[in-house]
Length: 343
Ligand SMILES: CC1=C(/C=C/C(C)=C/C=C/C(C)=C/C=O)C(C)(C)CCC1
Image 1 (cartoon, rainbow, N blue to C red):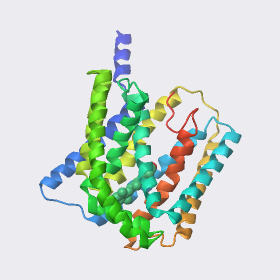
Image 2: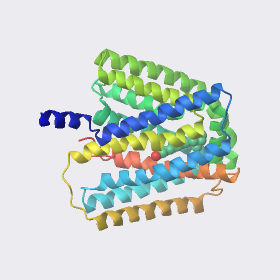
Image 3: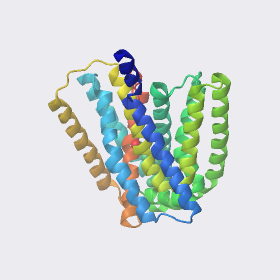
Image 4: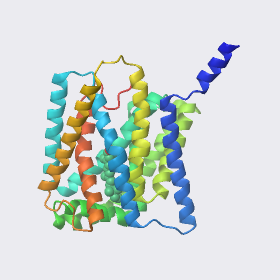
């Protein structure tokens, strides 16, 4: 009798990863429904409020998770590996900043591609570890899944919130070269319908392909549900808020669920609290130094608009400058483990 009770309690007790995935889904669902209702009732959120939400979401909620991601990637890896990682990472940061001076429009394109890659590939590994990805049987299928999930973040808002999107893109480019602004606007204007068409084709191919290889399975159904939620969220929620809350509420929340699964599978490395604290302080110091250096070298660090807009533009360039090597060095050059490690 008591065994039955404890077994059913065990089943009912939620694992951290289940909680994280559910919380992420619920957060985006509530925001999507709320903003859809607001739109129907004719309410709109002032840009000032949107920018404050973005900064709080990205700086206070998302940045700490980025530090934690680096920490878990370097944990268990030894000093030579850590030193090599940090060295290549800083070189990549410097190279990316240099590209913003040489070709700001192309660099901005790489920054946007970083957001797509981080969102998409990060989510693919969450599917592998927690949600289920058995219906994605072939490599091109997995690449398409990552493109569709990450593309929802950057491609959909471009079409639906075009003026705001272009305005901020111009602001970001103006940090380095206000003269390059005209070129950005026309490139984005002409590229938008092509990108949206491509995205629609990729979306249908991804969902159909998953059905063909996985059938009417639980994993496929979950994929349809989550992909649909992302598409609805980025369609309905105004772009500055949608991107600013996607990273903390979806990306980071779900990655913490994946990390919970990864930790369970590996032995404790015995790092003392003091050592963990020291690594975090060193990481925070390095991050702050990169931000300060970017502020000092950029000709117009806060762009040529108002202060709040300038802060959004500066923070976005900064986070892309540190995120690009995070994906390239931390994941794609680190074949053994990478930032989205799944045991
Ligand atoms: C296009 C665009 C934006 C770009 C956001 C980007 C590019 C965010 C990247 C975030 C990353 C890489 C996070 C990593 O953890 C803004 C500023 C929201 C304003 C509206 C238009």
